[in-house]
View 1 (cartoon, rainbow, N blue to C red):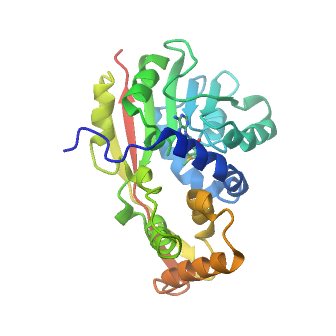
View 2 (spheres, helix red, strand yellow):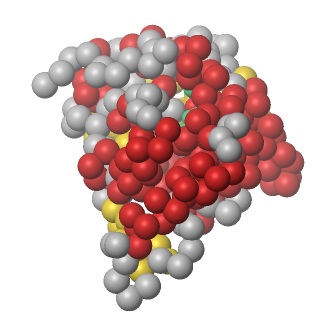
View 3 (cartoon, rainbow, N blue to C red):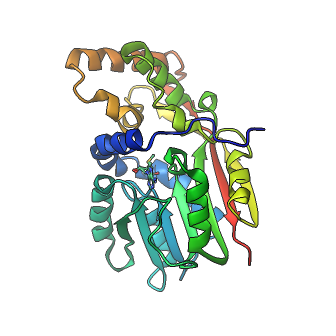
Length: 281
Ligand SMILES: C[S@@+](CC[C@H](N)C(=O)[O-])C[C@H]1O[C@@H](n2cnc3c(N)ncnc32)[C@H](O)[C@@H]1O
């Protein structure tokens, strides 16, 4: 088993990637909310988020799962959402305004240098963020310090590319049209079972557990259901692309999925892992 991360991302490239795709994340957050909720619920369950909790959400992007966490913690709780890139949080702040009194507060913060007192939170959540951080050991140690004794942190990461059909097909098409640049690699940095759990133990968590989810989405064959993933995960490569080249890329993606359709439905398997760390009591 590996003891070091396989793909260590570059801090400047990651900041640039997320700044470039912030608009796409904001635009797709509401249309994708129902699908995203299917991932939020098991993540919040794994972290044990309950009424009255103080919750820190890392890498909140357009606002999830911080917004969902705040609905659980209720008026007696507190949810702080955070992200490295202020531009990613613009939509999160707007969505929070619509939530009223139970809204999370959002602040820009690098998860390797959290600006909070030790033991300030009962729970920490992070959906698809930890893989983009160059210094994972530093981030996990900062998270452990931010938790109270006995507190829990839950991270959602992607399983292997081969189990995530949406990324696999889109990545193959993008590589064919625009060339391979390796920018998808960080997404699958913790695809190997045990890798992130071991890193949590190394960072001082008393125990770490992991659970895999392998949902299969039934996507409508006559809809461009793949466009959200294309724009959110490859947005940094689409800017400035000539319309005819964009159209050719999209036609290729549509054709790839069309060959997999049966009865108007494309089965789209995903593989997600939730890794939970518990701080010593
Ligand atoms: C895939 S998005 C996930 C956003 C959101 N949690 C969701 O699931 O919709 C990854 C996010 O990680 C953030 N990020 C990357 N490096 C970070 C760091 N060192 N500290 C905090 N956030 C970071 C990016 O700005 C981006 O918003």
